[in-house]
Length: 163
Image 1: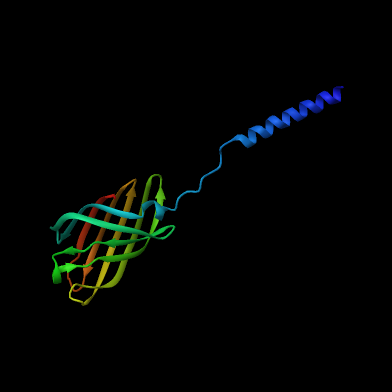
Image 2 (image 1 turned 180 degrees about the vertical axis):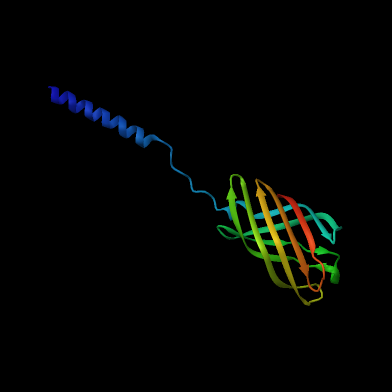
């Protein structure tokens, strides 16, 4: 009789123990890749300065596309006057991203490339000190651009909101 009592108590204790272990909602959902979190179009204010003087101040749309889980490609919109005085869209590839709390950031020391302008000529460009910062639906981008044979760089700051 005592054996049956102990066997029943053991079975009850095991049932309670297994019940507590299996009822928890501790399944971790996979975290979305940082590049996926920031990918999209952002529209906002772009300020371009040349030699300390404001050259342009207007609305622009920057595009960010997932390259890998931890890198993005950024398209800088066309700027300047139409025709030969404009700078076409520029693509910066593989900006590495790092997440810290609610902020996702990326930095690239320099990036070089070529692009075809409105007249059909191929122009070289170099972009340095690229910084991207995302917090929620907001983005801030800063960089220095040298385009073609320009002797001075254009300092750009963009602040936008995800569309």
